[in-house]
Each structure stands twice: as structure tokens, then as C-alpha cells.
Length: 158
View 1 (cartoon, rainbow, N blue to C red):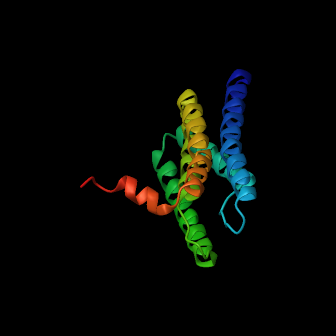
View 2 (view 1 turned 60 degrees about the vertical axis):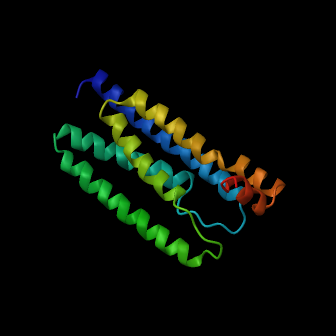
View 3 (view 1 turned 90 degrees about the vertical axis):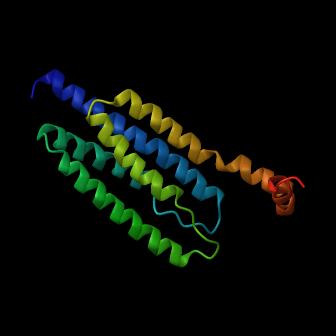
């Protein structure tokens, strides 16, 4: 591998790692804000998932074997489902799938970077972090108005 090619691959890996860290930082922030919640992943886990996606994308692209990416995506899905199962058993107030879906997205973003879709992956990573961070305004509205007001607003007019 030439020096320039090696530098490009290193920058691609760094981009994937930073995308994972971006989403991981948001999840860590959410964990610190919400007491009693159990998320399967934080900064380190999302960073490693992105790194794994990038490594798999690199190997898959280098060997021209897309099945490697598919099998790894299946493996990540199984790990995420197992993590969801374990944390949902210990949670008293129900559990959403947001963090688990974000983990799969981060894996795919890491692979996208290595397949040459770096600008798209960066954009989607920022959108993913923004969507994850968007929960706070809804919660503030919910505390300001009782649930019955939300149900009245959503009910069809008579």
C-alpha cells in the first residue's frame, strides 16, 4: 500500500471513529440526564461499533466480498437485540429502541465511509445525533401540558 493510499485509509478510519464518538457522546449525555435508564451503549461502545463497521467495510471492499459486510451486520443486529433483551428485563418503565437502532446505523456509517461515501456518512451521522438529541423539547412540552390535553388535540373534531 502506497503512502497516499495508507493516509487516505487512516483518515477514513478516523472519520468513522469520530462519527461513532459523536453519537456516543449524545447517548452519554442522555444517560446522565435520565436517572434510572439503562442504555446498551455509550461513548466507548458507539466508537467501537463505528470502528468495527469501518474495519468490516475495509476488508469487504478490499476483498470485493459484500457478504462479509452482510454477515457482520447480522452479527451486530444479534448483539444489539441481545442487549435490548437484557436491558428491557431490568427496566421498570418500558424501553424504546432508539439507542439500539442508532447502534446499527453507526455500524453502517462506518462501513459507508470505507466504501467511499464519506460525505453522505458524515451528513447522516450529524442527522442521527440531532434526531437522538431532539427528545428533550418533547419532554418539556409534555410536562407543561397534561396528557389529556395531548389526547384532546389529537382527537378528531366533532
